[in-house]
Image (cartoon, rainbow, N blue to C red; front, side):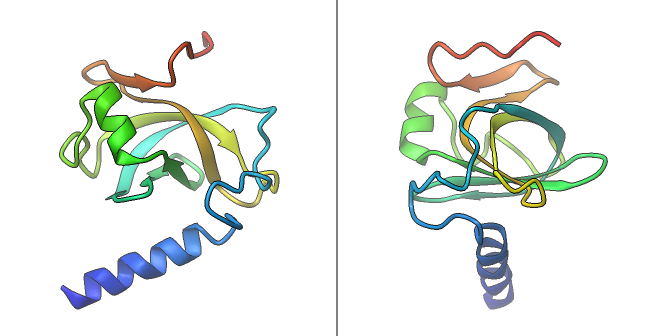
Amino acid sequence: MKSKVLALLAFLVVAGGSVVAHHGYNDFDRTRVVTIEGALEHIVYGNPHIVLQVRNETDTYTASWESPNLVSRRAKFDAQTFKVGDRIVVTGCPARDPAVKVLALIKAVERPKDGWRWSVPAYDRPAK
């Protein structure tokens, strides 16, 4: 158990390294919205954020989603909603540095296999 906790803490330190402060979004390009589709590799359902690690064909992205309480109220989301391996689609604002594979200010999260979807109120995913 200790090794899992240590591995999780190491992941969060590495993945969250570009985020300068809680809710400090200066490292993110709020003028752009990108969509990442891939397999869910890891999920941390915690407070103050839910952290999703998504692997697509070329990279692994970390998405920092808002607080579990807000998400739960809007989408009936809980710690069992996703399973590792689920194919998901995450839409959010990318880091200003393209080498940093982190999304913040999440606009939408989808699971195409069953149509489950959460989005910021009034956000519609652009047509493909």
